[in-house]
Structures are given as structure tokens and as C-alpha cells.
Image (cartoon, rainbow, N blue to C red; front, side):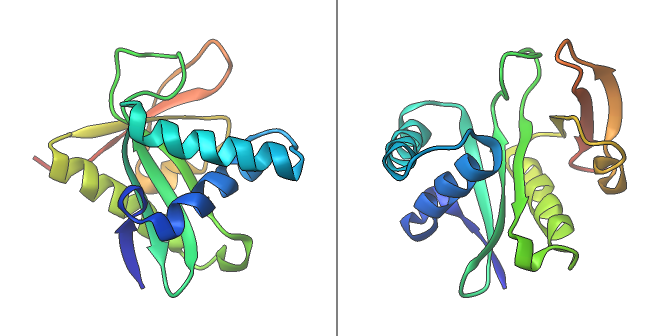
Length: 151
């Protein structure tokens, strides 16, 4: 099992885009999904939003997590953002989200960040990874931060 940079690995990039749409997007026809995937892959390389997309693989993509410069229109004064943590259903409950979480924090630290921000509507989930509540945003999601280093 290893952590890879999906942004630099075309083998998994298309699957990442497809899974993002299925998990966080609206229902799409096969043709609409294909168009979405192609547009998302193009945006990943043309826009400056995506810092890293990390994938956990073991002959197959198990899950992924992203580090974005911003996440939506809320709190653009904060950066970077912890985003798109996803573990495939067959792999859930095995601690892989913690592996991805730790990999993202290490990646952010390696790049030079001391903390990352995240927004969520989940209750009592990210706290187990050390997330610290900051405020509730206008869309009722909660804003948290996580420390990347002990410095």
C-alpha cells in the first residue's frame, strides 16, 4: 500500500474525477458524466486551485484526499484547504481515512504550511483527527483547522 500523487498519475486521475462527481455531484447521464470528468481533469491542470491530490493505492485506488488553495467562496482569506476525503465503500472501517488524513497533513507540512482548514456538515468526525472548531459559516457548515506540525 502506498500514497501517490494522483495529479501526477493519469492512471488514477480520471477515476478520481468520476468518484468526485458521483459522491458530491448531481445525477448525470453517462454522456454528462464523461463531459464532467474531462472538464474537471482540464481544470485541475489549468486552474491554480488544486495543490495536491493524494491517493491511497494497493493495486487499486482505495481512496483519496485533496489539498486546495481554496474551497468554495467561503473564507478565501484562509489557505490551504483539506478537501475531498473519500474511501471506497469496500474499504471503509479499516482506518484508511486516518492514513489519508495523516498523508495530507504531512504533504501540507512538506510544502511549508503549519495548518490546513476544512469545512463540513459532519458532526464529530474530523475531531478524531485533531480538527479544532473555528466557526459556523453562512451555509451552516462548520469551519475547522488542523495543525500540520508541532513546531
